[in-house]
Structure formats: C-alpha cells, structure tokens
Amino acid sequence: MLKDITLGQFFPGNSLLHKTDARFKILILIAFLVAVIAAKSAWSFLAVVVVTAAFVALSRIPVKIVLKNLKPLIFILVFTGILNIFFYKGETLLLHWSFIKIYKEGLIYAGFMMLRLVCLVCGSFVILTYTTSPLDMTDAIEKLLSPLKALHVPVHEFAMMMTIALRFIPTLVEETDKIMCAQKARGADMESGSLLKRAKALVPILIPLFVSAFRRADELAEAMECRCYHGGEGRTRMKQMKSRFSDWAFLLLMMVFAVGVFFINGYGVRV
Image 1: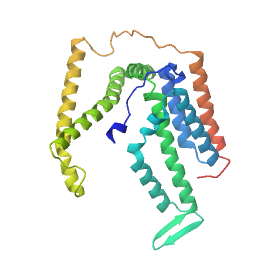
Image 2: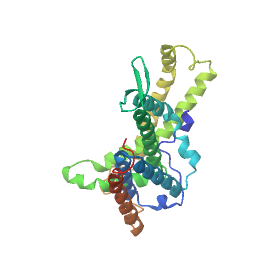
Image 3: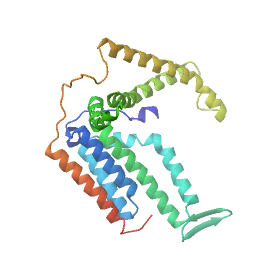
Image 4: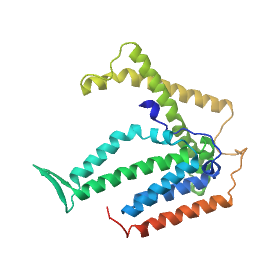
C-alpha cells in the first residue's frame, strides 16, 4: 500500500503540461478545483470527468500511475459513499429497514461525491505535482505570493518550506516501508490481533521514522548552510520564468470552463 503513494513525486517529461509555466499551472489548478467543487448536475460532472481525462492525456503520464495513487484512498471513497447513502434524504425511498432508509437520490449523490473526490485527486496531481519540479514549484509560489512582501511576509521561506515538505513525502514513505520490512524480518506482527494490539505494533515503526526524519532535516539544514543559503535575499535564478501565449490561452480556457460549469449546473439531474 505504501508503494502506491505517489504524492509529491515528479515525473520528468516533454508534454504540454510539463512545458506550461508553473505559475500558470497553479492558477489553472485553482480554476479546476473551483469547477470540480461547483459541479452539481450530471452534465457538469460529465464535463469535469472529460476535462480530468484530458489533463491525464496531456501529461502523457501512464494511466496506471495515476490510478495507482487512488489505492490508498479506497477506504475514504467507500466511507464517503456509505455515509451519503445512509444519511442523504430524498423523495424516492428504495429500502426501509428499521432505522435505515436508503433513497434513490442518496445513491446518486454518493456516486457523484466519490467521483468528485477521484477527479480532485487525479486532476490535482496531474496538473501540478506530477508535472512540476520542486524548484519550479518553489519559484512559482514565491512569484505568486510576492505582493505579500510589502506586508513583510517571508514569502520565500514559506514557499521553500511548502516545497520541501511536499518533496519529502515520497522519501518518508520509502523510509517507512524499509522500517516495516525490517521489523517484519525480526518477527514483528502488525497485521493480526485487535485494533489496540496493531496500534501498539506501530510504535517500533514511528520512533525510528521520527529519528530518521529529524536526521534528514538536520542534514538538509547543514547542506544549505554549507552552500551559504540565507533565504531569498539577493538570490538569483539560473532559469527565469517566462510566460508564453500558450500559458495565457490555457489559463483563459480553464477559467471559461470553470464559469461554464455554473451554467451547465442548470441542466441535467441536480445532486
């Protein structure tokens, strides 16, 4: 299961999304999230699914890798669906047993909610994390938040902190997997027994993981100090971010799509 977590990984490529300016990708992602959250009808959800599939195709990242990231979220998807099925009230009653009531509208709403989560996860990773290097992401966040420097907000440090945290997720996942394999080789049982017993079995994993995380953080801090890193003051960039016509066109297209979702909501089955 841990190997299926691809959050924070960057897959180098030469696709249209890889070539798009990181600043515009963040704005495109915001427009996409607005569209996904605003979808309330069958037609608008269909449009969101089509756009999500288009992003996956444009990224040229194998569908297997994108779907692989959904495996750790299966429990959340199922749990969300069950909650909406049993607690959403509608007009068409399908099943009534004791205090349990299942409505047709509840089934439809649960399906759309699960679909919304899938589109949010797949779209977000494909648009930004999978196709944007950590360095480009740091520069993009710093550029977009640069107006806050007038309010003495440490924009560069904030952007660097976010990028490092995101970048270290795959490293910590890999470290966790190694520790679990080492503990299992020593006879540790983490998959059987009561819930309390399995929770106690995680202690030999969490302690080495915290020690490893602090050690890596200390090594990173020393490496940055050895390279005379002192924040964003006086820092120059080897690659200057330049926007292109395709970036503006891409962003405009996504903004039009986000606005169009609100109009599409007036048609089809409301959920």
